[in-house]
Image (cartoon, rainbow over all chains, first blue to last red; front, side, top):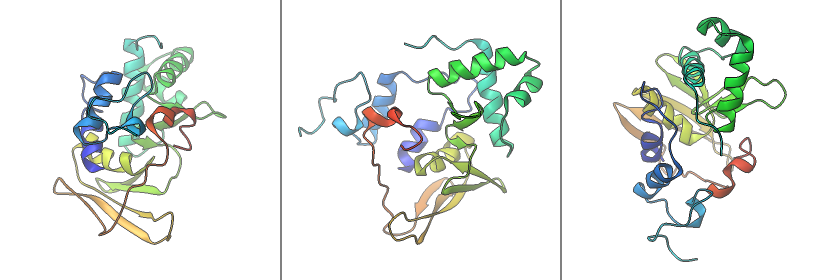
Length: 53
Length: 151
């Protein structure tokens, strides 16, 4: 969880902050091993590495 | 799709977060005064920030309810950071406060099952939690914003 939080929030107070795209947000989940339909944000499709359910 | 955030929206966002970091709860009046804006401008920015999920406005007051990772209302995640206590929305956000502020934090939250306190935090940049602690995410990502207060 802490690894996800770090990637998700590390730029939150940066002067250069901008909203994350859906793709960038999804990439954070994938980077910390959170894949599959449960972790697929609206408007997206499960990444290819997602386990089939 | 929501419109892109304006320069004013971004200034309002930053003022909201800075107010939380300072240990206070932001208000539209406070933001208006701090940034020398008209009330209508602040209200418009709140609407834009809520539409883009940057903040969650309280449904009754219109004030900030959540400006992730911070909460304006008490939650089970009271986070000690830099000698003061702030509220996080969830465990994700409790650790997120450490990430956003690049500092150590500590928090104790009750286990929703056993009601026993669970200590966790970030010490010297390393996250820790009580042995056996498990994070339960009960709502799938596609439905987080159906009811973000519940999520």
